[in-house]
Length: 125
Image (cartoon, rainbow, N blue to C red; front, top):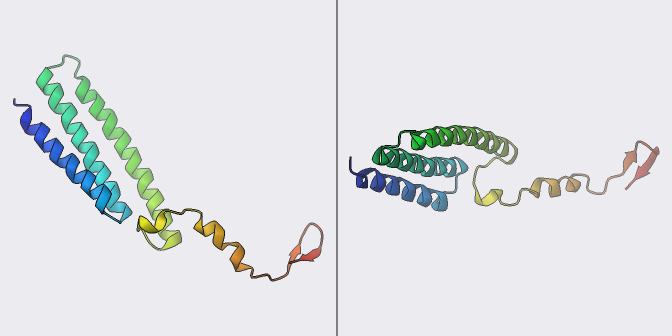
């Protein structure tokens, strides 16, 4: 088996993943681009394992670990994106840079209205 074919395919997949990571605004598409990059690495691991004819099949074992980590990463990533989409109403990566925006909006809800301090029983401005 020639090593050039899977290596070129992996380089193309990795390049497409890097382009998607840098050019996309949607968080779901960014996660898909990261998955493309991980699959390019997995393809290289399998190709070099077959080319070297390793008796232990270390490339295949590392690929299984990488697939496991990628599955956990995409599960957590999608959960975070869905939670952010529910609270903010957008999955645009450029708008999600400052994650402390919601905490800054909370004191603005009171608008200086008097509230009662429960522990002291007094009105506080």
